[in-house]
Image (cartoon, rainbow, N blue to C red; front, side, top):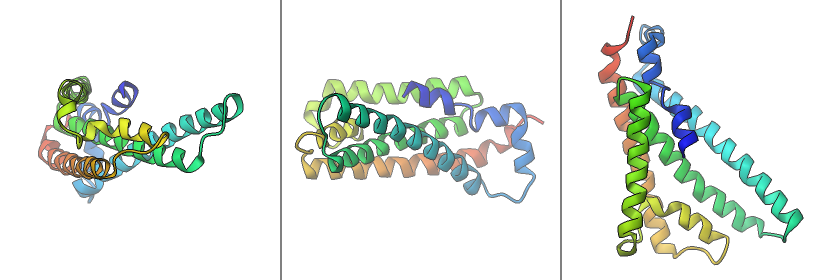
Length: 181
């Protein structure tokens, strides 16, 4: 998570701070298109990177230990990909909202860390937290997660992704005037 956050912390805030965003803001480009293009590329790079690592791990597990059911592996990787997209959405929303990349990284790290800490402390009392998605992903490799809890957590995660993207678009529009020229 730290690598993802550090990789994308300056995606929008860094462009605004360096003045590069000025070149984009003078073109007939909507802020929705601007933010969604950043989000799609960041998400795609993150997903491809994670899947490459997971496929390599799958291959070496197959060679060195025993065969893992490929369908279970795909379920695991697809579920974990939702968690990756949630983190990327939080980072890009923070980058759109805050004035510099370091502050965006700090806020994104704090949000992810505090959500995981809260889930670790109080997670026994709820089962539909989107922070439990990595746990549900791992459960696919064994017997699979409890379906109702899994679908609720996945739905909430997708809703949070949509909210973070909407917030990022809104903050990109709002902070466009703060761009260095």
